[in-house]
Length: 193
Ligand code: MN
Image 1: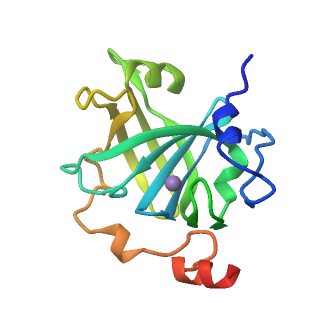
Image 2 (image 1 turned 60 degrees about the horizontal axis):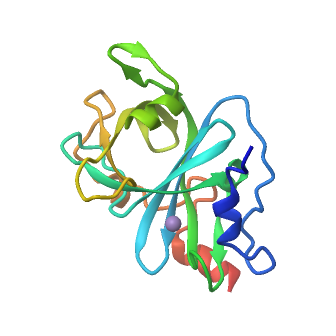
């Protein structure tokens, strides 16, 4: 079987970066993390544990609690499960910049096809996954739908489902700091300089 983390490992020099090398481990419950990443552009990396790796998307505008917002989520390479704990500074090279664990927790798969429950893997192949997040900041049901426009196989849309956790408040502004350490991006950067 091909190593699902091949692309992840090829992009990085582990002598230079403190990002995890990807020793695979699975936890009991499926985890999720959203990492706020100040690279050349600020974005939010959403990662969901599926079959022993973190399926990953870069969300340029970050998640929105408003069900009317459809946030572009660009699929990136699978990451190791232990990447979910990574908070720090990536040196010059791939992904250079500051990474914060903005939210973390577990999720439950809600994916369906014609009202029948399906696995996350099958949902990913069919282009529609649904999940309930139980994080420090984000909760409730979310949908991700593969975009049919743009000519890219990597474009998805992240949409909050209408439920009691939906809101019009901008959680990116009201809760900007780390769910792991409480630090701001500046504090993470200054600590490691
Ligand atoms: Mn990123």
